[in-house]
Amino acid sequence: MVWIKDGNRSGQLLIVPSIVLRDGPSTDKESEEKKKEPASSSQNSPEAREESSSSSNSSSRKEEGSAPSNSFIPSFPRAPSTSDSVRVKCREMLSAALRTGDDYIAIGADEEELGSQIEEAIFQELKNTDMKYKNRVRSRIANLKDAKNPNLRKNVLCGNIPPDKFAKMTAEEMASDELKEMRKNLTKEAIREHQMAKTGGTQTDLFTCGKCKKKNCTYTQVQTRSADEPMTTFVVCNECGNRWKFC
Image: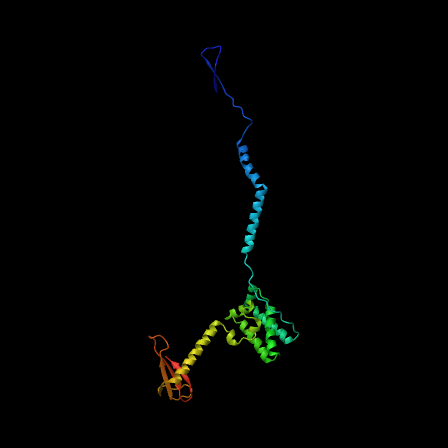
């Protein structure tokens, strides 16, 4: 408000309300819209569109790069076809053995082609389908189906063991690691027992041979286990050669 001096009445002041003129009504919504306009215009600019497209392309490239690649399976020459009914049946049986456990699905191997390649390698070595050929095929099938030896089947499916090598492997080579270790220990024990029986011992008639019932024996005591365990006694019959041991 403004104080104005009255010309008619001396000493008196009049109160006149002051009016402030504005260009137009301004609301909070307009101020907010004005604040938003620069941001929206900057987003619609060509530079912003290029940046957004480049960022989306880079993110898609990262996603593509992070995707795991398929495991590499070596390829071998395809086996020639055959009309021999025996050979065709053997190929089907080998392929069925490779399908044991559904490992071929996870690996992505062509079990039918692998079965044909294994049969072809066996036939090329033996040159006929006689009993030796059939026994060779049966042994491959039995080992591929062995539930205690799944690593053999996986190695064949992955290509770690080529079909031509698998066709010639012996029973000892196809055996599981557990069975190989067991055979190794048995062989060592048999060799040790044989050497101890031949190198020395004490002749006695205290033991009776379970085979020939004679008492002409030779025994040897050896500490085969820990020091607090009793010694192992190895006995050999001098009459028939029968051997046994006890603790």
